[in-house]
Length: 423
Image (cartoon, rainbow, N blue to C red; front, side):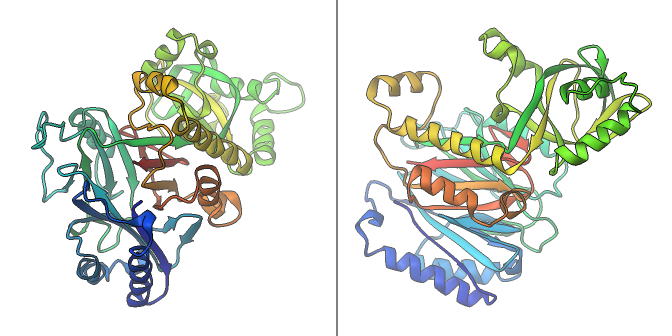
């Protein structure tokens, strides 16, 4: 397994030393023994913003004590490790990863990606998947992700938006600000990536049939506000008062964490319908969740923080702790079932496109990237998500960070958790 460590301390030197003591102590344990078949070493580091100015010294100390020269990572409001989370306090989380030769390549604005079609010395696709970190002040992030998706052969791009405005927001060999950086992985390196939502769908899925900028005016040919009221069990033409006032009152009582929509683009909606799954309806964990930020009672339209196309589909959602717990457990249970799958089912899963499932094989390490609006803000306590992952998948090495946006399969999400298992 990958060696890892985490610590919180107001002094960066003390925090670093606490992490290094853990890393060095693990060298004596059999499960963390170095694998000679994996000569390529890569350090992964996440730190909270309190250590932004000290990141050059922290990297120097890590290189001197671990012998690992290549490091990637980022600064974030919070970091996590197996079973624990540190949010808005000085903290570090570090993992020492080992791969077969030519499996990983660091990139940034100073270190260009391999050209499409590049193969490694062993003949493998050099850009099969990627872990990326993006400064949220970077312009045209969606376009940037689209471009990366054209270059990474499987579109298995995962990661998140790090903190904004700090001196050093992300790391690719050195501390950087602005733009994107990360590491691309070659084919043949098993990585399984899944996403969990924290929402519960209310009502059914609807087709967007009327738009005005970011205002959804019509759903299924009906005024969007009327459709929302119907999904909530209200009658739009009720004599008991203004429907908009009724909606506002219900929303305030029922949706303590706000009202959201789960979006399905036309291509995914058609794919789901063709497969005959739930009459064309997506599951909650397949949706891109965005907040409803306002309404126009006169036009009966709803403002959503997203760009739409006619034909896209959406469902109204509520976000709450129970829904988040249930879906995170679902994600872990599916992974656990896959990891324990017997050979016949394993073959079926691989044929269906699952990239990194190895029967009866424990992950060497994991990375968990969660929206910074989850954590204690959603679950009431820090570390709840990490404890659920540990309960469901075992005490595997894990580090991660609280993101300003999560990246899964080359698209930017919000309010989600993205879990990557390395084998």
